[in-house]
Length: 75
Image (cartoon, rainbow, N blue to C red; front, side, top):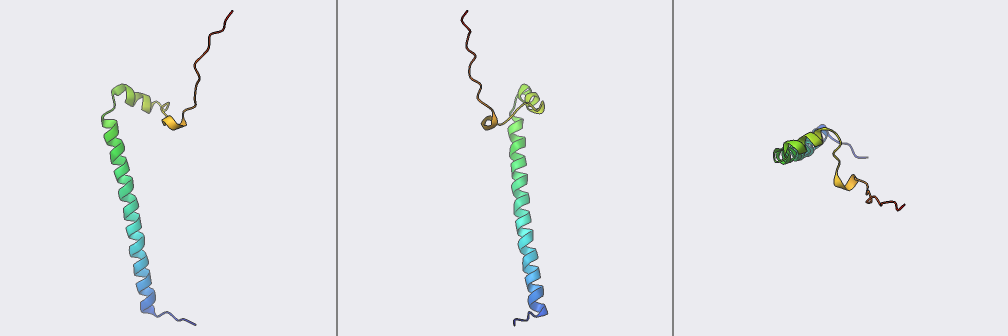
């Protein structure tokens, strides 16, 4: 049977807390960078592009469905 000492438990707790904080900080920095890039990209959009994006009709090109050209009916 292995018995942990109070010092070992305390050290483990501190190491786990430090690891968790590093992971949280890395995730937060990544999110902040992504938001900064999004803001920079919008800075170069025309007013019409911004209005279209805000309207909610804009979607990512990979999610748009293919619309074949309309064919004329012959009478």
